[in-house]
Image 1 (spheres, one colour):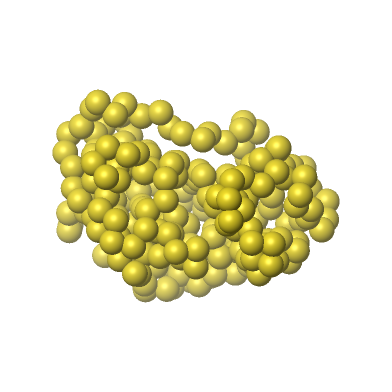
Image 2 (cartoon, helix red, strand yellow):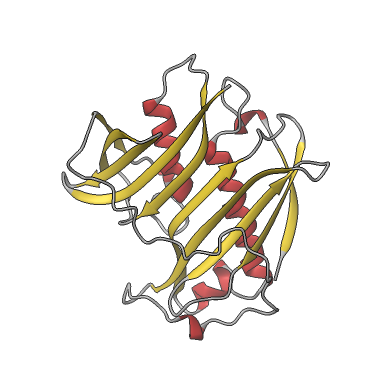
Length: 242
């Protein structure tokens, strides 16, 4: 239960410093995860027949080196052995020479679209054997438990049609896109090297999200709120100078 695919780093995937955007990297993860799930018999269409859907709870990544602009990279993904309700999936990105560029992990659940309740993992079977290698031996988090009483500033974002996925809520990769577009100023020589994000409540079309931010050690914390004080997501990013 492991698959790989080549991706080309397009102009749309990088920022003004030719550094890959976090959204582009998370889109690669999501695209290959969806393809692999379909190959394993548990993709979007297979689950839709049962009125089920995949929902992401958490993901993270760390970049060891900057992916090459206008070049090909190779992404590999595999699921970890499932828990009672959760399904963890890992990712490994390499260049053409096999050098490691980035690694990541995501945590998913399946929901019943009728009841909005969670579906137990024993109702879902993958076609294949589990990979025995992991970069993340620890269990994924459900929440980051960031300090909600701390803030150095805030901004507002209203969800657009462009942000939505086929489940009708804001796509997981778009949250970090909000942060990059609203927190950073043009000309900055810093880039986002690592991301950790927990998805607490789904955001929908035209929802207004208030995002508070503050420094947390050598990282920057972001908390998104719906309806004034309803926690939507938590995020930690690590920066690096070019």
